[in-house]
Image (cartoon, rainbow, N blue to C red; front, side, top):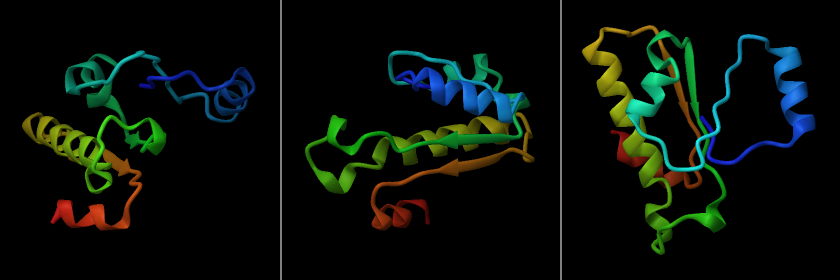
Length: 103
């Protein structure tokens, strides 16, 4: 899922080299229900990219990765409920200190 569309050249190169890759543009913040409709339960890997820090809605830079960490917890909860333990989840963070939230 993507809230912004990559360039056409980038899309062509992505899908040419990885035909099983999926991208859905939403135009808004996504939730677990959106991910489920996009096929999250059948995915082998879910990538959560940090996005553009300058466009973040939070003014406190310490909370910059809060939405990603919260989404990670929600995805893990949904996958655990359905016993889909084989899915890999990768979360990109802006701040190294944000790793502390995951302990």
